[in-house]
Every structure is written in C-alpha cells, then in structure tokens.
Length: 231
Image: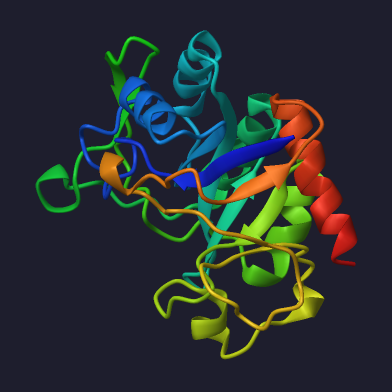
C-alpha cells in the first residue's frame, strides 16, 4: 500500500523549532496534510517522540521515533527507528559524548519536553544544536548497532549536508539511503522530507513509500527493503 510520509519534523524540543510544534499540533497538521506516517526528529534527542507516538496512535497516524544527529564535522544525519527503546539507547550514548553548552533560550529558543497532552514536563538545559561527539566515520555503524537506519540529511544543502562539507559523497561510510529533494546523482535510495521547523512546513501528501502494513513495523521494514535494494 502507498503510505505518504514526512520523516523529518522538528518539535518544540529543538531550539530552532517553533513553540507551536507540540506533539498534538504536529500530528493534527500531518493528518490535515493527508500523511499516513511521520517521524519526529529533533536535534540530538528523541525525548518528544513518546508523546508524539502516543498522540499518533490515538489518531490513526504512524509516528516513528527519530533523531537528527549532528556529527563532529557538523553533518546532519537523520536516524530512524522502529522502537523508541532503541532510539533511547542511541541518545544515552551521545549524552556521554555530546558537547555540554548551556542553552540560552533568549538566543537559541526554548527546548521543551512535552507529554501527550501538550503539557511541559521538562526542559533540556544543554544546547541541542551542537556536535554529538560522533564522527561521520562512526555514525552509520553506531546507528545500525542500535537497530536504526542512518540517513544523511538534506544532502542537497550546503549547510550541514554531507556533500557540502566533505566535498563529495563517500560510499565507504556505510550509508544505504539518503535524504534529498532533488536528483543528487548519489546511487542510493532517496527519501524526500520537509525538515519542518514550523507546522505549515510539514509535507503535503506527495512522497510515498510502498509498505505491506500501515504500522511502525511495516514502515520500517519497507525502509529496510529500500536500503537492501540499493546495495
């Protein structure tokens, strides 16, 4: 079946994300846009994923847990998971390696952790838009080790894109899928996402994957199949 997706959406936990990008607002906007599956992918954290997944479950939208990891080289890598428990293990790992710089909300924005009722239950003290301490040579193996799919993000962009920073795409780094909005010339399966920091930027029902079931397992298996086809 065709499932329309957007796997790269920031919530109000990302300091650059809009305060209105709460779990309920993200899910409802995705439904308005006609999507079947999304992923909440904040910078170097997945702490708003449980709330978004719970809201999605109540409203018939599949929500994958995810994270946009920043490598030591300032390259963004989208990390997609089937289960939040696996994402949490990755976050625990980079909590030990990530740069610890106190957030300045008046400069960078607030970093709010929310529950499924859009109530603030915490706030990240350290700035999230910093290096995870994981190099680009390490990241693919690390994410796969936690049962995730590592996807170099927005590779068609100069800022934080793997091609813009390294000068070329290195197939030896272990990636099996890319995120891009144009034909990049990279010979790997491609997904196209919004990288939405505001609700109105969430994708319309335009890009889809073929999956056997409309479920987290079905979506993740479809993504893994796409990765295998690119080998």
